Image (cartoon, helix red, strand yellow):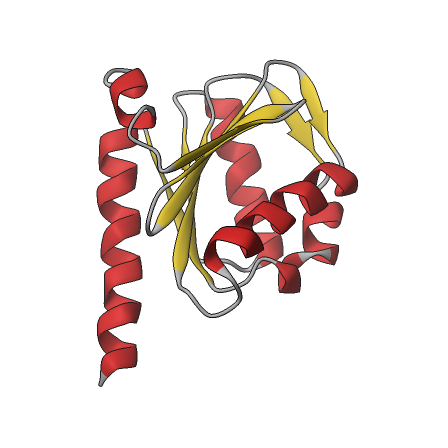
Length: 141
């Protein structure tokens, strides 16, 4: 996926966690899970703590899952923690894998979050920023 390193290097904060990396920007974050990792509830709590540190509970933000590697996550773990993700406006997955896309569509229906998928990071960031800016504009009125 092109322009990846340049895009990620512009992050305000980068966390290199045991199972993946998090890139925090002003209005969105990008997660990139390491290959063949299993994400559990405790990993999600670590991510939630960092999200709350950066965005708090009232700042709208978007979440981009930059899915270049194979990994697994239990949607029930995510579901049990949905209320802890602060003011997440939308979730996007960036992938070219049909399997990852089908998994994302299932998670999206189960978790009832607004989201879509893209094949590149640039389009994903543009879409996420539009969603966050709509909410920011609406909340000012």
